[in-house]
Image (cartoon, rainbow, N blue to C red):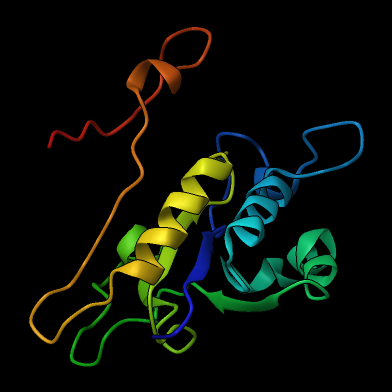
Length: 173
């Protein structure tokens, strides 16, 4: 089995934020949230990270995080582009923006050949989440007729902001 890969979705525009929040520092030492996520992921066992970014932000991402990380793990970049769609499909007339998460992950098709974990660049997950994910992916191999998936869940009350408003998916098992 191939080793699990960390996929970081970082192609968002940050239009409400007003810039690339994915690479803005969050502490006085200049760390960005991805520094903490990748640190936790490497500690859990991940050895490769794929950043999904916009082509025009590549230089900024390389200087903010990718170049530093390339000494510690394999770093790749893929671009979520509107034209990056499966054969036989067409971009609807008038569409100017790429699609969401599924389209972003599809952009990794040439970089990943085994199990992977997908995270958002601007969320913090905690070391336990990466350990659980890595362990699951290394201990549960897909079979020819069975695919194995997992999701790390959080208590909703632990994900709310100070004002109590945030959009979250609620999963029931």
